Length: 236
Ligand SMILES: Nc1ncnc2c1ncn2[C@@H]1O[C@H](COP(=O)(O)OP(=O)(O)OP(=O)(O)O)[C@@H](O)[C@H]1O
Image 1: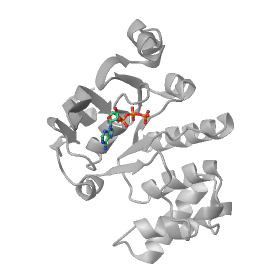
Image 2 (image 1 turned 30 degrees about the vertical axis):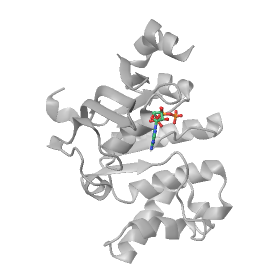
Image 3 (image 1 turned 45 degrees about the vertical axis):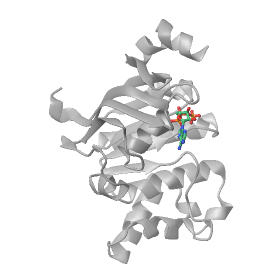
């Protein structure tokens, strides 16, 4: 693979909060069309890294490139325009809007009819057409996860950052989400996600990065990372 296959590159990214180091020169690369995972114990810096990539936090050091462009310190709106979609650990759906309205609401500037058409296609693709008219407040936890993914896809991202997409949902739905993500990758999307769900990370990722105390302590294909003594040390 060439460097042009690197859709996302973080180089020596550091972040301190009130003098406390949350990220310490963390570097990683995400290849186009891959499913790449980040794991690490609580407080290891995973969300901080995502927030820096997504432009909701500015780093104290290091650089971030998206599709070869330096986006370090760019705003969240700018990062979004460059094709980065994201979902959050805690659902950000509007409770007083239907699922369809939640999807159409994010497609600013797009003709409503085109947005509704796209929303319908996504709901169909994710097999959740039946809940199109449900209120945000009526959704189950698992349904929310799927709608969050649909909502991020409304903006036709080239890479999706998913913050714990599998947390707290049953294995059947986890597998369904993995299948959908794989299908999206086959169409050219890149998936980069954080999770505690080791089963999925270790079975489904092409590449895994392990963070501990703000540093990348290991990376590689899942089978190599799983047996790495540094990873076992960090977790146990
Ligand atoms: N806004 C903030 N202000 C101060 N400290 C913060 C802030 N955000 C994160 N931290 C600290 O930075 C460190 C890394 O946190 P972060 O949330 O990135 O870890 P994480 O790996 O995502 O954890 P978890 O798995 O629990 O979500 C932690 O020590 C956390 O307390």
